[in-house]
Length: 212
Image (cartoon, rainbow, N blue to C red; front, side, top):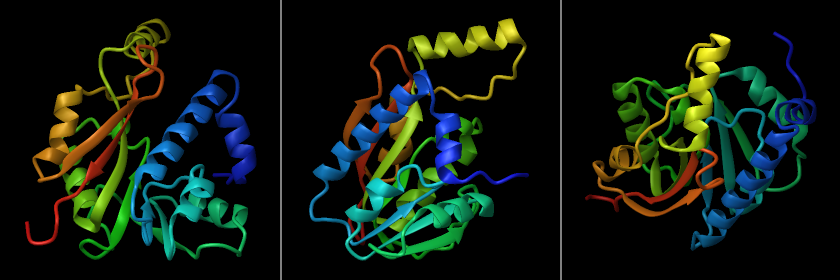
């Protein structure tokens, strides 16, 4: 499979209407990062893809950022796009549906974006949420697709009219938040990408203190 450089990939993936979605997502993430005090020392971005959010996350980390993905070609594209200057970057191949190769409470902030809408199995969702919580000592930023928006209807119609498999998983907000509150976390806030139009929601989550 051909590996595209980050700029080419993002130019192709986020054009036309998707360029608006990308700008809105970047703005939401920047706003959430600004709310996290004190500044995170270590950040995990998983799955990081080509590093769409690395330019935001890297300066937010005081000591290092770990960019992790299932696919090595994504990590290679990210590494090629980033300067050697700035907060150190560690690249690590990992599968969020397995056990992550990180210590308990290793990161101040774990960033997980556009992953859960691709997971339809309840057990896999619970496992992934538990792993994110396990490796975080303070906060999570995590996104999901919430059921009930026009986006949900659009995807359903596309499946019927074009005969496509229904690859996007939409979840009720209460059920998704429960993935984390059942693990002792506290949801500090939830932001909508484009209210009523787009299904994307982003949570800021506080993980349980040590020993709880």
